[in-house]
Image (cartoon, rainbow, N blue to C red; front, side, top):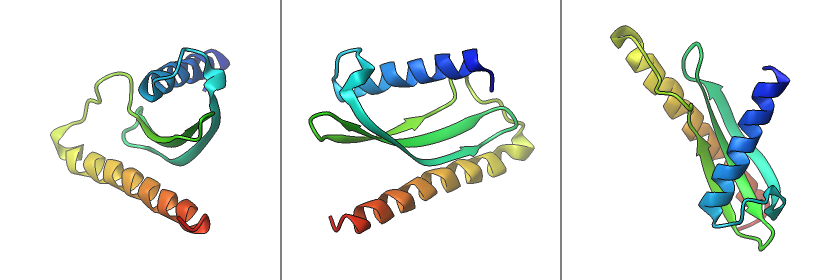
Length: 104
């Protein structure tokens, strides 16, 4: 991934995350960002799930979908769905493990 693409990606994530959390556009409001799961759903598309903690202590799970529609041949649709489900399931398992360690 190029530096420019990474920068745009992180800026987009910060803006979307801040808007979802009801925060101002200042990414400084996010105090902790933890990747719960990430994986490739097609040759070109990736899916990421992050746990975001804001300064006031609230948490939010953020699912970062590809910016463009994902195009898949009908033959590969079942595999794409399975990959997506696996990534989302892994994020749930990781979140449960993290909260288990904190004894929630």
